[in-house]
Length: 399
Ligand SMILES: O=P(O)(O)OC[C@H]1O[C@](O)(COP(=O)(O)O)[C@@H](O)[C@@H]1O
Image (cartoon, rainbow, N blue to C red; front, side, top):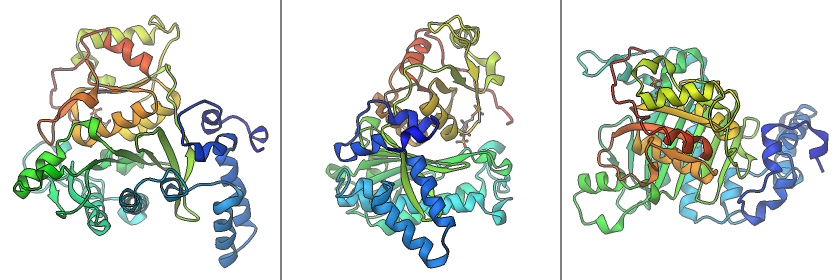
């Protein structure tokens, strides 16, 4: 009933497409959640104090069909097990805190490089305070959930064992793209969730922590990224489609705004740091030269977009299509490539290392790095057909 009153937006366009989505939520496909949110804001502006709150919660329960992440996951929604719901309640809480921290005027200096005296490694790899803060927030929320056996984080050298009877293993990049923070460019958090491998329970703690964290991406039970941008968006999949929820700051809820995201089969955008052009192999140069001239399988000239913040570059790619890539051995299989490939596949796209499917790779090292190409299936197929697309030289880039 709302859709004729609004101009098309990415969300309303998705709502018109066919996609895998739990039957209980089919009615949402006929509604426009953006309009629902607008009507909620209107209600909020016409009232004050206590009455604002009560009107908004009444609206979220029934009137405007604005379903929250917890409602979606729970018994009235797709009915995921209680353990996973409790875990995600804590994960979303962590991300609300990180969202506040990265936007706080009191933390505006915390993204600056802060390399500890005597530390090894390049300046760009030095931990930045907001990465550390985000890591601590996530670890504390996972401990409080009571549901997690082990957390492996891009920020830590080794996995952290949390509790023996925790049902889940969580891998995370707490604050991806943090080098952008000082300029208020979008950043993100990435999660992958596996089941604890009970058959390893007898092993020493350090060993089982490592082996649980090195599970193949095909064993993911859930993944999510959270984009901290003009809106804070939590995009997740539990293996039945990819769905995005937007943080409603008036209620603190993540509200379902992008049900059943389907990546366009082909886009017209490539996203890569092309200052590396002269370090690329012949195949990748040839591919980019071809599509930017409109001489590829799709006879249109491609555009370039590169935020240099993987979550933000991927979010745009999921909505508009095309490829987000980093062809050098930079991004991490465990914390970035696997969870994001899971989300892209669940949206009908592909995650590749330039040669084949990311999810079928078996991680051998916790911080293993690899080339990563995420995007529309036809664009990924075309790229892979150029054969030689992985950047093997990796000179010490300064920025
Ligand atoms: O320097 P490049 O090759 O453009 O890499 C940029 C990529 O690095 C990242 O910033 C991640 O790097 P870090 O893990 O070192 O933070 C991504 O967000 C971004 O896509």
